[in-house]
Image (tube, rainbow, N blue to C red; front, side, top):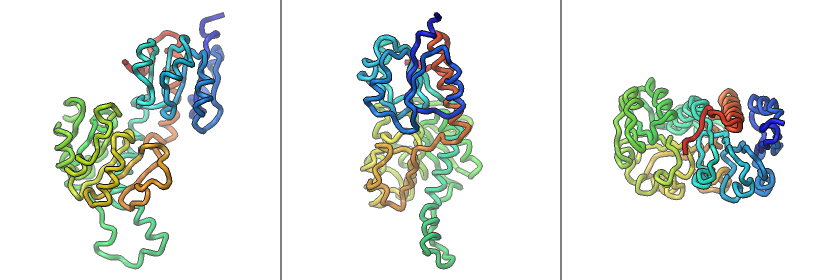
Length: 328
């Protein structure tokens, strides 16, 4: 009996079909899976992970000390079907020598497309316009009715000029953006050069941007970055777009900024919590567009993510280099 035949894999959800197919072919492993499209309950996660050598999880699964303790010393690989890994307790995982992998690159283009779509939807007030058509508010053409903001000659500030931030900027160039500015943990000259972007402080991003686009990772440094002080520095005509992680934006402060006219509008593909409660105050605002975390939601991207996640897992369990290992 080979080592792989003794190994248990636990999968916390059904995954997109191409990855599921690849997983079903790994018949030398003992694969257990939460057979649902819904998030696995916490108690089922704890129960399912016991004795696992490999764990395939999603960003909705909080992999903390309790889960790792339940898994026990067999656990060697955690492969997450996501780009971000803030749902993983990295310090605990690192202490135990567990390898971690994620799915960068394959969802970059889809997320960038969605970011641009959300920006255009928000700045041109499309949800309001659609609602007016449906409810009979459209009476006649009027010069100033439903006027929004345009991208031409604007300054776009990007928080996080990594793969997705750069991919967003590339798509905005043809719209006639006048200037790109960005902030990150450090300067990224090779990315900045392509779009002629200037590296500035967080304060300068807030003060100078007509559109602020958040594409950074969630870290202790970025949590709550877009807060009351940040919004007070923004132009009253400015628009905030967040397709990174919900906690980067302080939602209470955002609500105050939107209702007081401190900023013009916001578009969010991520919230805290997810899903956002249907009675949340932000959902009552016409100048706030909220999507259900669909940045990477194209068939091609999600299938590619699932295949990469499975390949990461199987390579890791075999003791081989993983295509996308996170260096902890």
